[in-house]
Length: 121
Image 1 (cartoon, helix red, strand yellow):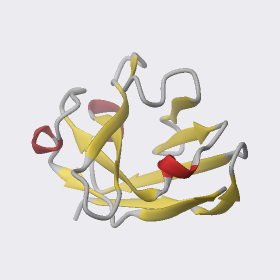
Image 2 (tube, rainbow, N blue to C red):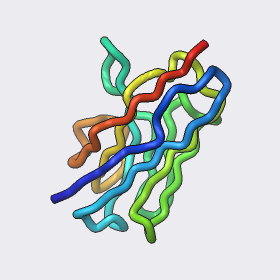
Image 3 (tube, one colour):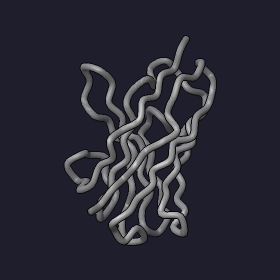
């Protein structure tokens, strides 16, 4: 059974930082791109970032320059370092696995349960 488990969410003040982790099991991690998405109440799920099997990285304009994605294949884990957080970043954050990077949720086969990030003003 494939499992993706997010951790690292929480409450932070505006301007602060958080690092999210996505630990994967039950799949050949090296063969999968991992993406990060978020969904705020009443809004559509938004693709934020993705890291490919070769380490290529992609970012949405809304997080470019503030968020950094990385992967540790030895630990089957992908990280999302989030800096300069804003109240608009408040959402549930999800990681997802796919054969390749893309910004659309339907491209991803495997999903974690999500972790809440709340940024106070």
